[in-house]
Length: 407
Ligand SMILES: N=CN[C@@H](CCC(=O)O)C(=O)O
Ligand SMILES: [Zn+2]
Image (cartoon, rainbow, N blue to C red; front, side, top):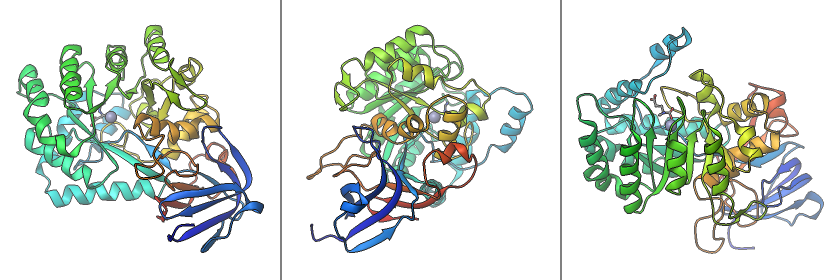
């Protein structure tokens, strides 16, 4: 053992590892040492540790990896939501309302709001979070959003290409996104995204954004095929994006392109060349009354999928990954194991964090294995099945984030 404090969590009724062998262990134990997992196995064989936690037969899963959120915002869109529930359809234009409120907020206020949303997510079992910019939409406010996000969440995505601000020429705005605005956010971000959709960015503009951001060394993601069929999925695959998110309206060629992107990857070991993850956002689909993304069809076609909350004030004002998992089981026909995997390992895959370096580098997240980051979610239930069997019941009992007890 190293000099770090070790904690043995024993008497785990069900340990859903989501590791490369997809192991689900009964009567299991986990040892945490510092920020890493140092041992997993059957409780009867567990080594001793400095501290001991009795799980009381409860289930333990990897902490949720929420790979798609928009947490840097101020303001509220209740009126838009009410209008939608009364029959109006969602359009990208609502983003401008949040942009106005976000620009008007102080740095302190934006930081406080974002940190509160992170706390809310962690208290529900989320241990690794991405957030996008995208409610600044000018150089100063996008850079400020990126800076605040970098201080608040684990992964930051530049989404200057969220909406063309009113009164600005779309091509000139795209020049800004690809030039000075990109330079200003670059120190704070690892990813770039574009909302490729009618009412947002055209295929040509999206190509320009993806090319410039790739050139700047950023990993890519795409908001695609949310409101209708379109070029988003094909663009994401062509550019080797880590994920394409929403994926509500897919034609057969889109599904084949996504499946083909994974043909050089060994799903059982997680080795080989990675493709484009299809990230399904069921809370958003329900809140915008869009058809649920075809998660079952994608899985059956051999596509790696993620589930994410898409927490934002317009289309999905929730950080509940459990709600997404429940919906994926009840309505998208995923098994509980598949849904939990998509919300943990799948999110990690979408963020390029599914494998790591146990010695001196970034630790893997999204699965429970020796050397991975100790991100654990203990349920107030004996098995993960209760997430779907008891919909709406708050089942988070305890959370460890990078080895630190967070709840
Ligand atoms: N679709 C684009 N962006 C967000 C919604 C943004 C908003 O309406 O404020 C999404 O992922 O759903
Ligand atoms: Zn989004």
